[in-house]
Image 1 (cartoon, rainbow, N blue to C red):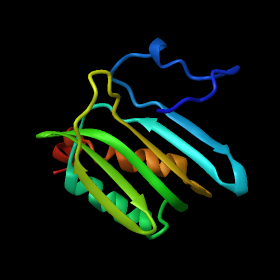
Image 2 (spheres, rainbow, N blue to C red):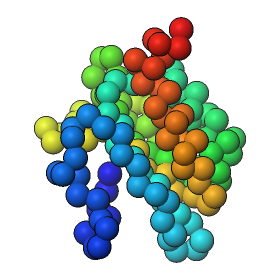
Image 3 (spheres, rainbow, N blue to C red):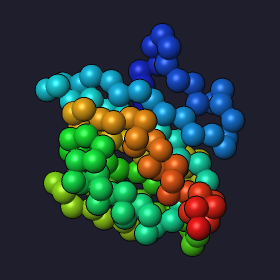
Length: 130
């Protein structure tokens, strides 16, 4: 979930439960860009992540220039990237203290819609929707 500077109001992840979905609100950055990040607990479906990244590349969640993250899937972990309209998902070897998470950089980030879309990629959500 990245370093948020530790200033007043900073998120202290060690104060949270392990299994939660915690989103940081988009913050203004240089050149009019904003960042958004969230933890992604649970197990995710690769096909659903690919679909989400495709939708993100078409501007469904705002003008996103970069999306990257790591999540647990049925057979381990994957990392995912979206940059320049190109999405990739690949196997990932996590560090022992790795936390599943996502980060996005762009303009007009639709935070709630993006958080809801990632939650919909969880394996338990996909099963429940069937």
